[in-house]
Image (cartoon, rainbow, N blue to C red; front, side, top):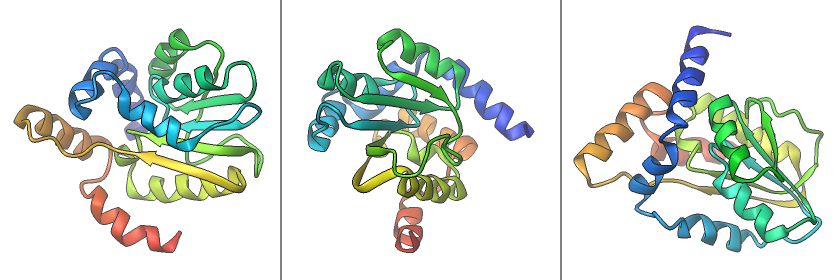
Length: 185
């Protein structure tokens, strides 16, 4: 494993301890209504197979599993052991998998819905492209992919922390990526 990947993993393992609080402040959504809206919009049904990429501490995956109940499979994927440990405490009924989203360990056409909430912007541009290719590969025909991201905060401290994370973990220009790269997918 290269040094940048080790650094990222160590960062997220540590960040997992405060991640939920940070996202609540950054997204201005302390009651998690945006994630609930995302899940409601996707309309998962019992029996479906659902994939949550860059699951972090598992909020979306846990919401989906509670909505589905015992019917259906929900899989949360993250590369950080720390994030997955927090996620397991929230919902042990989700299948939590430590993996890299650019090389998913699933067969082609194995999921009905895929999510990526608050994680896409933190990927390097090449990783975003690979994630999108992997999503296309693992979604069943007529499968749907839902992405939800932050807006840049007006709060100077939150904006600074956001930009530090982009500089060290992701892309400096997520909007530019979306405008430029999405047309080739």
